[in-house]
Image 1 (tube, rainbow, N blue to C red):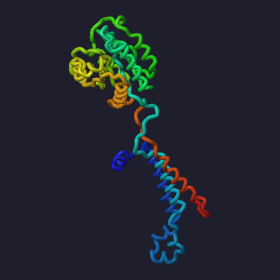
Image 2: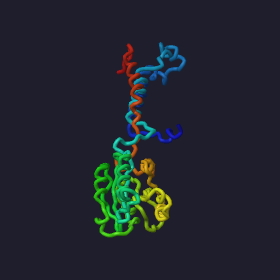
Image 3: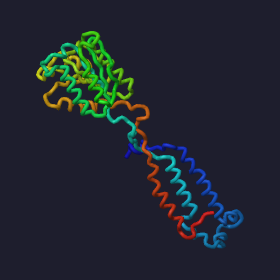
Image 4: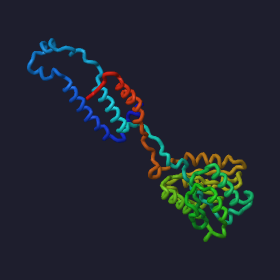
Length: 303
């Protein structure tokens, strides 16, 4: 309740200015309706009261009072009172992600059937199914890092581009993991929606300590018995302040990764997608309608 009161404000505060003419007209009408006002300056108050007929029988609620109340409620509704936010209907519901795929001869080893590279593609496809509609981009790296695809909600395009990658298409062999992560982070930053990075690799070179950036997950494309304890991958995950994911024979690995991507660091909203203050002035319309019903009483007129 305290938080709601602290957030209470008006979307259009200038609408409150409409109360001023209503108040002025109400005061003017009261002065004109008081027929004894001009006699008070020249006549004793007790004598005036004795000569006045019906002066004490003024009804509690007059048409003038009703008009002021209705006008005030209308001004409050126009001003747009609000105390809570609602998400924009145009906001991107799913967080973006960038996949960084290592494309080297070592990824064609068959200790993880059919090959390490093919298993990485399969896990990527499973992850894309679980993240249906979420923007996903692709970076390929070996000795150099290259942007293959910026984030797109079309999973089939990502799968198609990943399927076309092979070690012989890379210009130079090596392990430019740091460049791939930097390129993926830059792409996410340019998109302005935040997101996470998922690296699919079987080994990693030494990395400097990460100075911040999007969350990083390293999916080890190694046999499960080796993946969780591989010192190079563990060191890379530590340097990137990331998390090492070991493959499993069931989909629990990608299911857990999908949940992590869905909650890892809320992205800053894109322009026009920020949460907006919810319009609540329409809640005053029933009260305004009830006041309007009183005008159907016989004898209620205002000139």
